Amino acid sequence: MKKLISIFKKKEPAKVNRRIKPSAGDGLAGKNSVGKDDLSLLWLPHLATVIIMVIIAVVMGWYLNKKSTVGQIDVNGNLFTEKSEVIESMNIQNGTRADSLNYLEIMENVENLPYVKQAFITRSPSGEISLRVQEREPVVLLIESNRKTYVDADGIRMPMERGQSVDVPLLYATSAEMNADTLNGEIFSRVIRFLQTAGEHDSAYITISEIAWSDTEGVVALSHDNAYRLIFGNGNYKNRINKWMSFYTGKVLNEGINSMNSIDLRFEGQIVTR
Image (cartoon, rainbow, N blue to C red):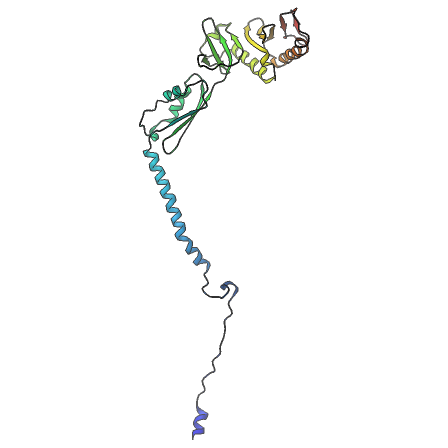
């Protein structure tokens, strides 16, 4: 009877030990692995912190900008114009809020000064103002009966009494248009074209000391040593200046010519001396 019972007794299945091989993406041990989604979640707090800091910086900058008053004023680029004169023309009152200023109007006020051609302004968040000026460059010293003034290429007059001197040719006011506040007539335009052409030559500009306009002879100049009267006429200045420099370096410097005092450069292919 015991044998029959043992025959019908159920057998329990054998236990099988199975090992799972970790995949290549599960790390060296295949344990505690982190997926890509989990990594992106780890960066979210840091990203949020950065965004918050940027927002705080922008808000603080805006707040300081609104509350700042004008502090130090720096002026640079000025040679003839005094710094105090520039600051006075800006007309900025003490304690003025920096964001309430009309900067376009300030630049226009500075540009009304005689020697200032352009003004450029910048402002820091703390209220410091930096003004850079571009001054006019004198091209001639205009000689009139009762005054002397520098004049730039635009015909703008500039006073001499500035403690700075500029080595430029003298221009004698021989016509009524030279007495205008701004020289913009045809005669002055021709004189300026002559000077600009002479300035393009390496050494022609420094050989000329005085200039005048003659209704019959056009541009008339004196050499730098006041020895020769140079007649350049009206137009074709580049060719005539080249003729003068060839004559000056070939004849005047090497030989010296004492028997003449006038050199007429108006004629094509020749130089007439008297």
